[in-house]
Image (cartoon, rainbow, N blue to C red; front, side):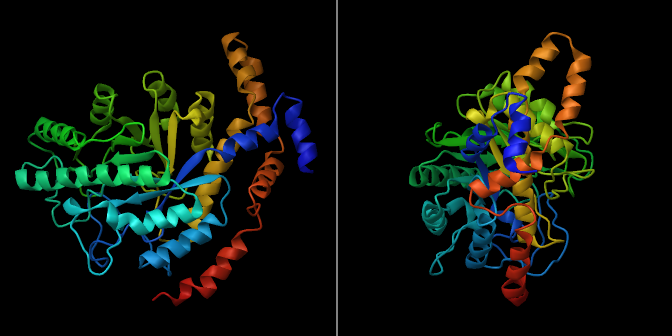
Length: 418
């Protein structure tokens, strides 16, 4: 079936496939730099293990070891993904020139100058994340530590990241979403649950006392249910993070990672709940298997349902900031990047091709039988032809055309990295 024939099938339902594709082309989706090097970064010893409840599994050859290698890999990814990507950096990806190393509490915008150059040359915006893990001053707590010196170090890191985020927003002309997440918690049952949370709240207050333009810098507070080594108690729980954001709507927004909840919870249902109260929210889209295992995003039911709720709730009009967050070292890292990004784009396009007004009307009228039938029939419409046309219209390869480029890049570039 041709694109024209597929488009007519959708037109019969009142759906303009061309308009859907044009809308999606304008939606920024953040591409996470840490998939390319297993969350190692450039500011600490890459041979040391990750800490803070994070774990990367696998040892596939070709991990990026330098900023130049990581940027080259990102260029390959950008050549294969449609839409409007943004970069998403962690503070640990600072680039120190001429031995100008600085600890995390002393990071400056100049340490991200090369990233700004990279983004400007490619027309990208950039989001940012303080890095509250994999550092000697994790004791193991950071912002919630009872040690005042430790806590002060990490507060200063957060303030530095506000300044860096302002720099990224000003230089690149796009808002910068700055996400505050820590792996603070305890391996076993704590004797004091409220103390760390009060210190955490006060620490975030101090970080957000650093001046910034809320229209340009969007601080977020992200929750988590648990991590490796902190199984019994997480300071930044869902209730904590959401309560903080709700009490500080004038200076931060909530961020939900769909791997950071109990296995029976789904973020797709939480999106409309939060948008009933918050003017703007942020998402990290991943794929958990039994826990926050950060598998490559698939075109699966929950990813499609997340995309549907974003579209149904008007989230593509600036109300939902979307980013990817996963890191798989067991397969070709560039393939993982491209697969996950394309699948999220697929899910958003699939959601834009639903007759949402008609479906809502059927629900409101109580016509649940017809609603079920129509929802099921929509699943077998010729979506693949629309997706391939979208890729072609973005100047990117369609499905079935891009993986040989990954294989060629691996043979020519990745195998040479020892």
